[in-house]
Length: 276
Image (cartoon, rainbow, N blue to C red):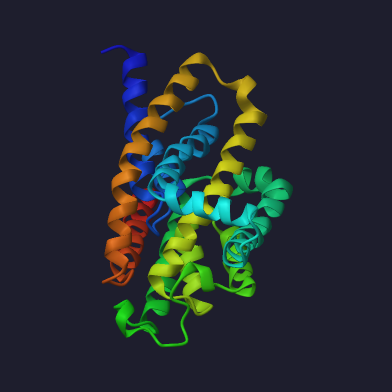
């Protein structure tokens, strides 16, 4: 097997990791950093690879929610109040991370994109998730009556809280989906609804991040890097198609405690490995 073939198999594997972890509250970027370090994935611009292949996961969300997205766009153009409010909330939630990303993403990548940071954020995030879940019922049917049960009823203040929490996810290991879902739950949104809103918010957020990163660094990418990105993109798309549907079914009946314990266990294992 040639060196280039091995390189592409590594990219394919990391695409699977991305597709599985992107919408779970366990940090896809953190997993990409850890697994990339483990298999010695060496790209000219590995951090660009990690961001751009997320487009595959995003396209999976667009495909799954295509009818709802079409309804939102059509309703907004027709100035339907419910759809206008939904679009407004997505924009409000998107803006904080867009502003922080433009101003500080270069410094964040330089300071935090390494396994040691991932270990700390995985464990800390898991502990926070356990604390939040202790305050919430396991089933949506048992949710308090004052909790927001549909994405259309989310207020602009709740959207802003979720958007500010999304900024934390720029630090690898935090988890974009985890921070936005937990923030949504703390603001009074029911678990499944917070998860759905997080998925919709991922579309503009990750699309903007991927396009910006690719635009800034495309001239540094070799043909081999581009091919690796294409391979990772496809495998991420296929895996995310399965995971997104599965997670929506899961959270309608279960809590996120299992993912919290997974984060803590993974963080401790990797921490011990790095120490040794």
